[in-house]
Image (cartoon, rainbow, N blue to C red; front, side, top):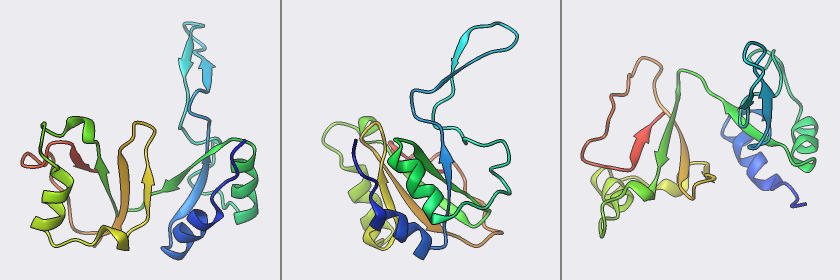
Length: 143
């Protein structure tokens, strides 16, 4: 089993992001009404995840057991979700976006998603509302 990237965990803590344990991507649950198996993956592991405080040790142990973690977002958080599968052929949409807005993406915590895309974690003022979609940048969206 792959060891968790402790440096990545530290980068999130340094950037004041709060990590929460998630179910494994392939976790399922039984729907109590239909009795059918339903996907549960990548959802918070615990019912009280919104208020529960997790220690760094607890997060590391969860990762070492093959678990996944997520970030508890606030009104100040902004995630740039990059999905290159939706880029038009021959158009590096992310490179255009970075150039157009003079961004240095190395300044933000970053993860590779399961589909091969990226999430860049940024901060914004609480009262700033983000409009969707980014019509000039197919394959990019804010969360």
